Image (cartoon, rainbow, N blue to C red; front, side, top):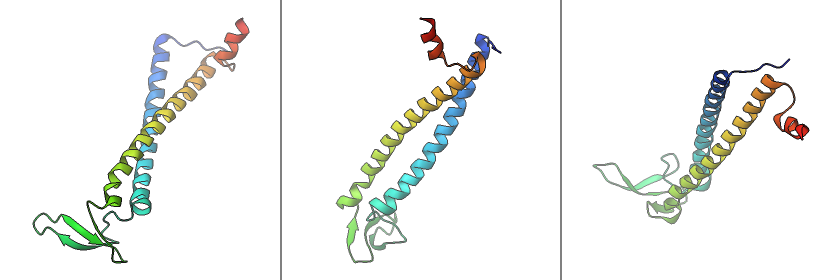
Length: 135
């Protein structure tokens, strides 16, 4: 049975699909950012200040800004240490990677849902098969 949708019904269905995709991609991206940030802080850039792993060596008493800290092995780090300075670049790479993955995921999910919508409304045969059969 072929069910034909009006232009308004198609537009509403596409908007509904786009909202679903937006919510799914947003949730997945936020979870991936949180996990990536945790991995960067605790796995890759271990010298970045962490109050659970480091002891404060020098701190501004008024602003409470930490100038230097040391780890359990006695190594002293500052905000200008190379491994600490690279943390912000690591976050930038993480964000750029997540932006690319999110765009690809969004595009893929929209294509999948729109193909499902087309199958439900036109029949079980995909559009590309009908186009090739017409020639």
